Length: 193
Image 1: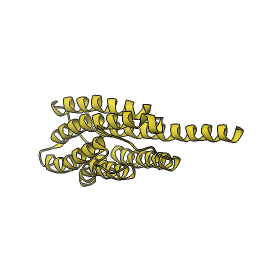
Image 2 (image 1 turned 90 degrees about the horizontal axis):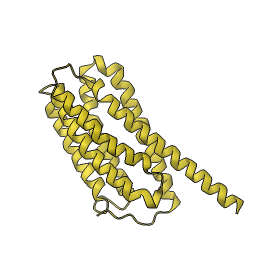
Image 3 (image 1 turned 30 degrees about the vertical axis):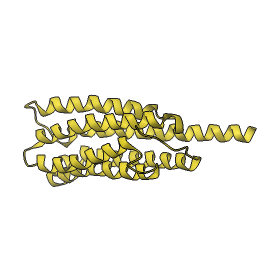
Image 4 (image 1 turned 90 degrees about the vertical axis):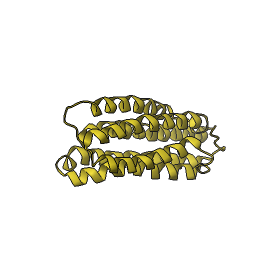
């Protein structure tokens, strides 16, 4: 199972910055998905491949800051699944958006599970992981929803995936803010002592 070394506050500061970055990138992706990408198929295709690719990069960098992929098995698995998903999405685009939704659905379930495991592992070392635990669990539900849409005959597009990314952005923001508040409280207590 995963292990986490005792981490100094500098690592918690990294995690806070990482969560803010994930929020920013996801928010930009969602805005583009609901606006320009809806009517620009080439941009939508690039964004659909880039989203899991970005997740792979983010998991790799985060794991590297926490002892590497070998030490953080859930992030290693999330990295691998996200790379495979980016390739699978590129292939699925040839078959249509329903196939892409199916790939995203499976990915959401798996990446949510790995995120949940990572958050539970980090809970004691960093605190403020409840939002990431919720996000991992909700990712599984979102994956199930995407799989059901993939099996339907209703029209599908990038806007069907954007709510999933929006919830992810929300949870990253909540986690970053929670860590910020925790740091401020800790500093206030130390200053009062």
